Amino acid sequence: MGQKEMAAFLGHVASKTSCGYGVATGGPLAWGLCYNREMSPMQSYCDESWKFKYPCSPGAEYYGRGALPIYWNFNYGAAGEALKADLLNHPEYIEQNATLAFQAAIWRWMTPIKK
Image 1 (cartoon, rainbow, N blue to C red):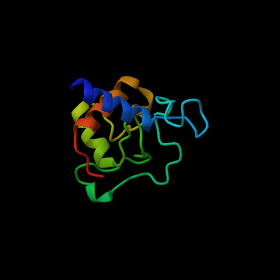
Image 2: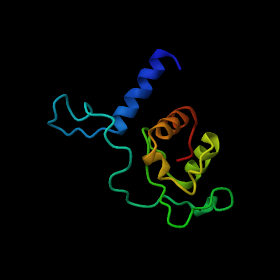
Image 3: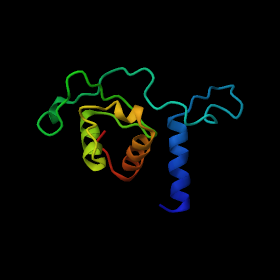
């Protein structure tokens, strides 16, 4: 990654993890790196059409997690394969491990995802 791409990556990370609000000092995007998960997931993001390659694990929810959130079972499965971590069965690992969260963010930045 070049300097401009790194700046763009970190800018996206800051905007996706912001905990600022409209009247916060510096504006709503000034407080990045605050949240590492979707705060009010509206669904579990399990796509059964991928059940043969990336089946949803019982009890797992595939809502947005990480510095650049990934969603859906098939993206957790693909990221897990690339990072050699069992993210399909344990998507919560991204919330619990900052190194893995940034590895997943770089994977997400560099890899076209399906949804």
